Image (cartoon, rainbow, N blue to C red; front, side, top):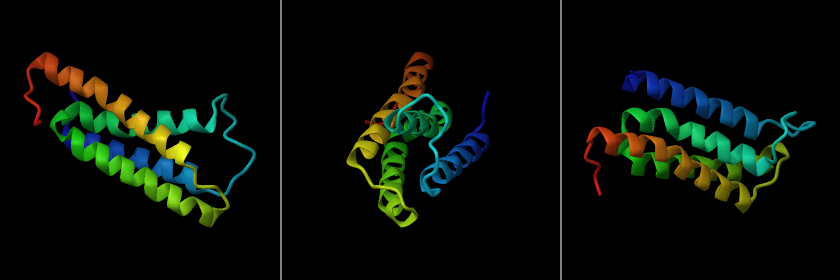
Length: 116
């Protein structure tokens, strides 16, 4: 079973990878067969997944923090030759919601009471 410190460290590592990928000057593309929006969606789903798995009661704080992180990235991107897009932030938000679902389902299944 993953413990909270490990989940926090993994989340921080994922956040750094996202920062590198989104705040590096634009290049030839990711080389992956996905659109920019799909990559934002997947990155932010993966960002919230580890910590929400072990601390599903933190879901609201994680969602807000992750969305603020995505917003900050969008504000910083023009400084590195990229464009800020509302569509990217929407993809981030949808990814966050999707990434929270497994932990919330797990919490319900094992009887963890979540704050409302």
